[in-house]
Length: 179
Image (cartoon, rainbow, N blue to C red; front, side, top):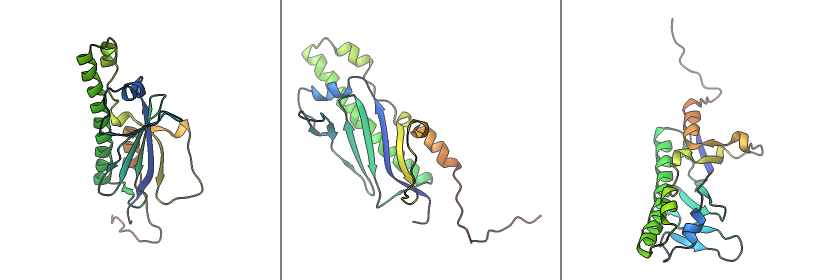
């Protein structure tokens, strides 16, 4: 690939009670792949397979959601089209999760569950632009990596970082401005 690109992308966000909502749904949703009731208690959603990347979503018992964008073979170019495509993919995950929560809320109304009103007020999936980018590989894989809270940023902030990235191939002559 001749363009700057990112791959091995990991994002996360939290929403109180999300795991409980999904684990106690009255009927299993086709959007949910697996609910592990024995060990780690993860709820995994069906993968979203797109043309050149796959998105895997896991809801943890802590109600933290992990989103993995698997695109090592086809890195996402850091250009307008690539970043719009990735943002669109994250919006699909957001929509899927909101659909699951909305289905739970509808079922709660029908069954007369008392917790419905408090859940309704607190069950909006955060906008994907606010999700925290926990990791990405920029360019080629390397032995050196940076991670941790001081390197975490929202997806929206990362788009601003990418907007300012400038890379140059050494050894290529550029046209100089004439005075």
